[in-house]
Image 1 (cartoon, one colour):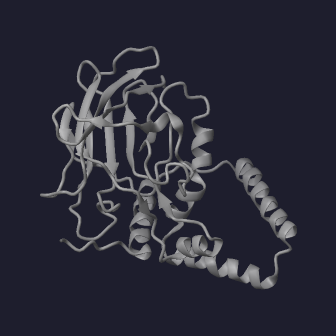
Image 2 (image 1 turned 90 degrees about the vertical axis):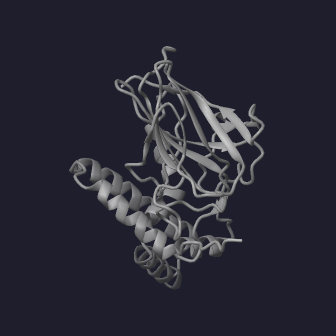
Length: 281
């Protein structure tokens, strides 16, 4: 049996921070009035917490030390994506008519290998996990199939680990981009991902332990779907009956995003269909 080497919080955090900083380069400058409004309200909310819970100096100093440790561990992308992003996503997609959105999380990497309308995600020889055929159609909210839509998928392996964020895994393992055919259809051959704990040996894990929470995310597929003239949708798909679907630490599960796989017609593993509906740009 191959030994599973889990990433440390510092290692995965540093990787997530580096990739976020690279993607954030060239971001638009902020509007001063909006920064003022948001920062003022955020500080007012924290002041209310201090008053409500009668925060002591010992607790205040522990909080400062913890904030410093989050930065030292490179865990701001992890912490914010786990505990804050689900609310940002709700606001961003409040008016969407098509497929429901979900959080992106800290483990997306641009530039995955490209495939046609059907293909198999890159895998190691003997990759663990139940085979899964994931297929469907991309179409507009008006019902028209979207030819040439890009389905960008990334996921954890059977040990709950992501390539490029855990040691010993090939660079593009279980990551790929698929382009729909003229009928808008796609089919992806992969494996059923595993539930996993977010890294717990760093600052985020220290908070979780101190609060008596669990650190688990349910098994899921990460997906971005884009097509010319339509809004990009970033979402996650979960599995009916899976562990922690009902108590995801990231609060990202939505009923509309839960899959119910059936035995594959090929006799190998499972298969499941999910259609993506894109709003106009």
